[in-house]
Image 1: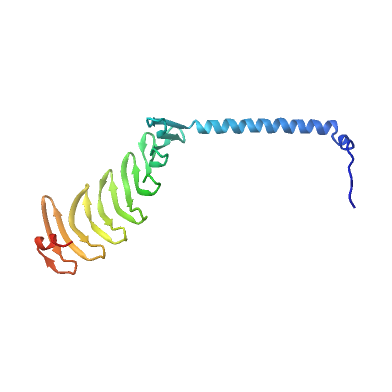
Image 2: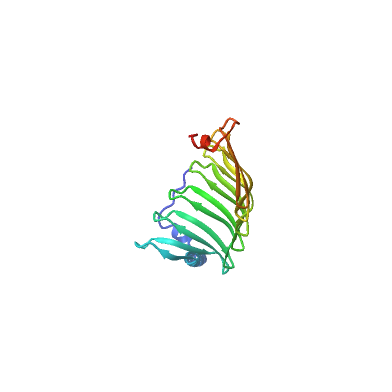
Length: 209
């Protein structure tokens, strides 16, 4: 059964009490909307442009999380992020990321107390790792390894205070050893291979394509 409501009869439904309640709700929603606008404005004011390109587009921006913590971002002219760094108490800390102009992540490195500490990764354009190394107080320590874009190891060896030390190994793209080199002070003793395990002379090694 359908119920028809004639015009005019619904007006009686809005009693004075109901009208007052709707007014209160309306005022509350208005205040809530105003608070939301203020919040959005305050959040946007946390981001500051500190450097611009000649045409006015942002080149470097800082996003403040608090008085002592903030992100620093370098931007390409197309607006994409080039570098992203985190600072705490004025010192770089946590992860730093580097991106190509088309948005691909090309490197990541970890900082502590303003110096590079921890792992560093570099990436090929296909996303495969291109380098992995470890730093202590800004200097590379321990094993460092470079990779071809097919995932094969290209060069690997140890470093101390960012200087090569001990045996270093070199490979071709299919994983064959092509060189072993011993680094100690100013001396550099190298053993050269043809990629099939046979030791060869420097002249023979230089002729290998």
